[in-house]
Image (cartoon, rainbow, N blue to C red; front, side, top):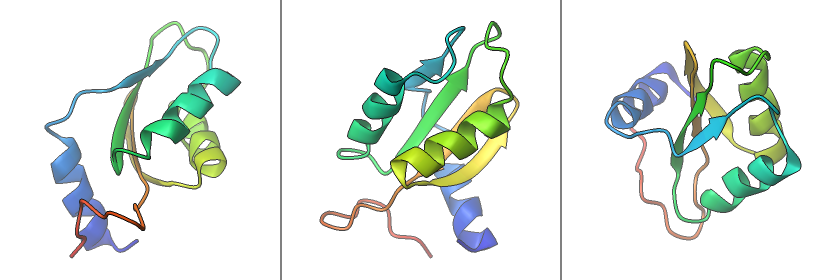
Length: 95
């Protein structure tokens, strides 16, 4: 992913709210499966990491990206932005 594409995805993610929150129990198989399933309808997902989660958000992002075969767009503070292209019905056209 080029920096131009990453910048475009960041601008799109700026307006969306987190649809998942990682809490005290950190990454569970259930939340990983839910995130993976949500990539069927969305290409860009924002995830919030709650204050009571002791794991590093950057490490959480890498693990989720590896398990869901997606790409980390940005980790800023306690927010994670992930992107996975939909091969059948692309909604976001990258520059």
